[in-house]
Length: 122
Image 1 (spheres, one colour):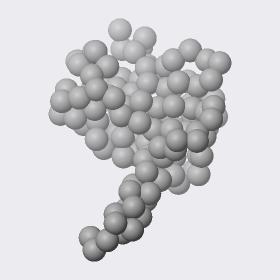
Image 2 (tube, rainbow, N blue to C red):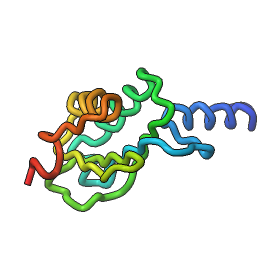
Image 3 (cartoon, rainbow, N blue to C red):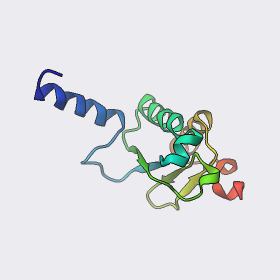
Image 4 (cartoon, helix red, strand yellow):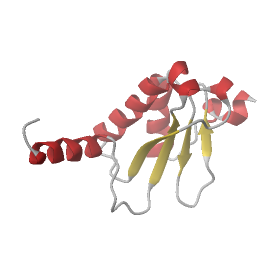
């Protein structure tokens, strides 16, 4: 890094990659549990696959973020989907492949992937 301008550019690029925008309006929010339990269970590759899919599909109204422990460590990796006007959906025991399927089926096509939800796990 050679200047403050270069640092600002790196910051802007990083924010674009994780799809965090301050001017974001209504849209879908995906929250990935990234506490120690989630990370050790494989949440980081799940988070990256969600970000890559959202970017690849150019889903500007989808925000993928991280949080701490969601509270059911034995079911990690976990992420929750919040769509306006719908109930929260919690996906458990996720893998990058499952996350890509959820992105295609639930986020894009509006069909909850029931077999990956916390209700199916319980």
